[in-house]
Image (spheres, rainbow, N blue to C red):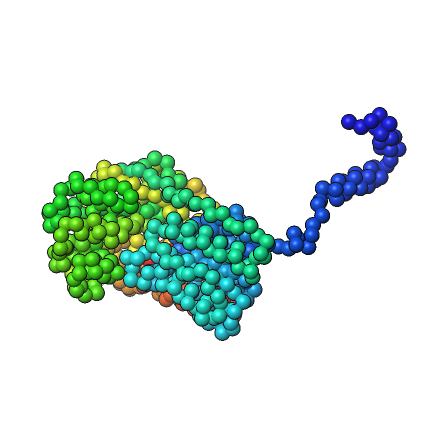
Length: 565
């Protein structure tokens, strides 16, 4: 409290002052208080001692983004100045301005960069100027069961180095279970940054490494409620509609589910018989004890084992094995173990079973407490012998009422726009799945935006997936435009590209109305050739002087999005 004389002085001053004078007095006093609160700073203390880094990510499924976000959080906790940006939004010319660049990037398909990262990847391989000022580190995400494991990460790392940038931390190539290894790598990187004079001053305190806990995906339980073939009699394809009954699941149209498939029981039994092992015998795997039958059935990949693992097996068993891919059962038969003590070492060599992702074919609004999948039985050849995809054959054989564990893989790019916005959906084969979800959802909520579906398959009579539903949506006006393309059993066989060319005028009208264009399906049918066809349509219209840039602009705006496999 103020003493009485001082209080009387203030009251008199306030009562005899105008509003403007009171505002001035208030500001004057506040300024004095702020000035007294700020301690004197020496030149040494006002120097910025925080490392400044840019973290960019290129992702297809969201893993690289999630990891890069974790890195940015850790870096800020370690008193770094951080810019986090996706490569689809990163201005590649900013490379000339960067001091420290951290790249987190995944590898897709046959060693290709994620779609959103293609411009950055191509730019790196086209520029001729040097990046001598830049310090960098690269983390690649991939799946070691594919031959070109983390190739995109390797390419980016090598090209940055070729352009004169200085590697401040070694390239890390991460497999499907990556978080612990990746976070340890980044903590070490942060320590290095704090010790580099060009990244920070000598006055910073040493970094205390804090362990990072792995954030597990939320899993759900469900029952296989329905399963039936979508192909008619006479088709050489097997495409299944699967319905999983479950509780409330947090997903949106465009998201996927991850399924961990189980290996066939007869194959597991054959391996146990060959090794003379009881199914209940326990082995240590990832610091936990498991029944050998459980390991072989649910935990380990025992099919189409990679050349890298077979090479390690050859060294373990001291045998000459040619470079090849092989199932574990065949490997044990042809190149048997010398003794039973080697079994635990072989189990340690095998990779963990990776989840398979399937785009959801239902809507959380239209199909409450149920998730629908569209699963095609994959067929391929190894050493001239026909094989089936593990997860697709697992679904083909799974009986009804089987319990299933799954997780949801969010896809923030492949998302419906506002209800009033037009949508063009271009699908080949099982690429119809997300569009069945889109159409079900829009129909259920009464969205007023126009819908146009272009769909291609092989045989009109046997392979028109979800034919009745699609025709009903068209008949009721929910589908404003429908174009289907088949190679057999119709008068004029057509393809998606030919249909787009024939409907070029409509396509342009929809795009100019603000339509979003979504593409889904096998890359042989929906990949670069489809992009080229759209570029040609834009160019031929005469409205787009640079059609390539026009298409890229649609991509940048999120109005041209692809889910290609």
